[in-house]
Image (cartoon, rainbow, N blue to C red):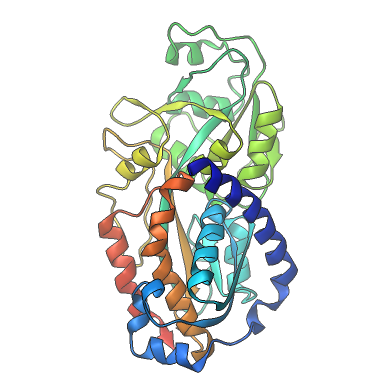
Length: 368
């Protein structure tokens, strides 16, 4: 089940990206939702799972995070089955593209793993809806090494090109008893403005403050010796085809590409495998701001995978009567029935305390 669904999702993501690219300039003029759907929103019933309530119709378009792309593909397919009059498309391109597209109003919603900066956010009010958590893996390709452990300082030195070969003493210290080859390390990072990059470098800033010097952001000044790939899948492809490579890739894409990935040392001193379960543990006790912005990385929970991150669907608070019913219904689905799709895609469901806040925030969407 898991392998089949993930394979289908990978194929679907590519198709969605093409559809999103083809429709990218028309997001502001998509076909309207039905008057019946708008009436459903006005009655407040769209906050319930749409698979069991009144149906909606219309067209929505989104873009952004490649981390959530596989989930979007599955969720869109299921939602459209229950609401046959709907057409929803989602194109990747990275969190930065999603935020830019939403600000420019060429899409109806943005997928993003990082919030807007204060200087970049739209002038009109926006709402953040968290939809899931997931691990950022340290995916690697190293012949003869089937098990690897890394701590934050070692990872920081690898990605700053201070550690250049796999048999470096720092890596050996993390892996007692493992025979490490002298293979040169090829560091692979994102070429696009990426929430994955922002969360990975944010974790390094927090977990290796005396070692990491490249700061945190959706793009950073990587060393010239590194290689770049577009999207999580682009990084995964380069790692897969390059002996000695290491890159940061979300778990769903890493599993889909059949990559190996390291266990990473958390705050409690335990080396933790990236799984949906260890990502869920990272969601415990998160401090959530009133606007539902939070960071899941570097959790103090002993069972938590430390490089866990979150992703949001971002929408404008004020929606037209034509679009509002469908926006609320789709968000409601992502926060209810859609959560059941996540484990098969190697993502983690939202913790109940965060999900309940997101569901309650649906009432803040103003329609008409």
